[in-house]
Image (cartoon, helix red, strand yellow):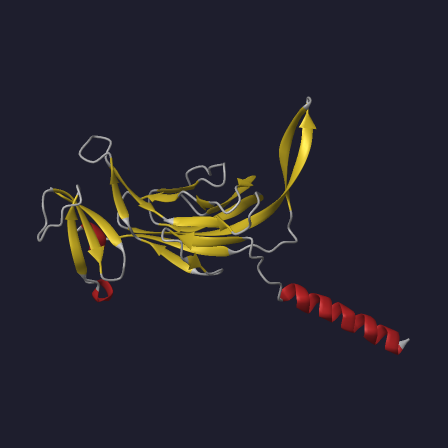
Length: 229
C-alpha cells in the first residue's frame, strides 16, 4: 500500500510540474511593424506620436502600439485575446482584434475579445491605440487565446463557430504607451537619444524645425511626429 501511495503521489507531482512548465504554443507570435518577433512576456514601449486631422478643429493626438500578430501556420486559425489595462494617466485606450473592438478604456479593467479568424500566414494588426489628452503613460497586457474552428449549419447555411481551447498556451505581451515632452516638444534628452534625421510632412529632408508636421528619426530607432506652429 505504501509503495502504491508513493507511486500515485509521484505521478501527481509530475503532472503538476509538467503543467507549471507548459511551453507556449508557436502558432501565434507578436511582431513589430518590421516583422521582428516580440518574445512572449516582453514589455514593448510604444511612443510614436501621430497628429490626426492636422490643422483642423478635429485635430487630436494618438499613440499607436505598432504591434501585430502573425499566424505562423499555412492554414486559417481561430484566435481571440484578453486585454487588461493596468494603468492609464489620461485619455482612453482601445483595441480591435481580430474582428471585435473593446470599448474605450479610461480606467483599469479587463476585456475579452471573442474568437475570430486569422488567415493562413497572415500578419494582423492588433489596432491598439491610446488617445492621450496630456503627457503621461498607459499600460496594457494582451494575452492571446486559441480557438478551434468548427463548421456548423444554421438554417441550411454553413458557418464557422469559434470554440475556446484553453489547453493551448498562447503568448502575451505588455504594451507601455508613452507620451511626454521629449517627443512632442522636440526636447530629446531622455537616455541621450539624438535626432539623426528630420523630415517635412512630404518626406523632404530638412536641417531645422519647420512650420507644420516634422518627422524625426531618432538614434534609438523610433520615429516621432512633432507639430511646430
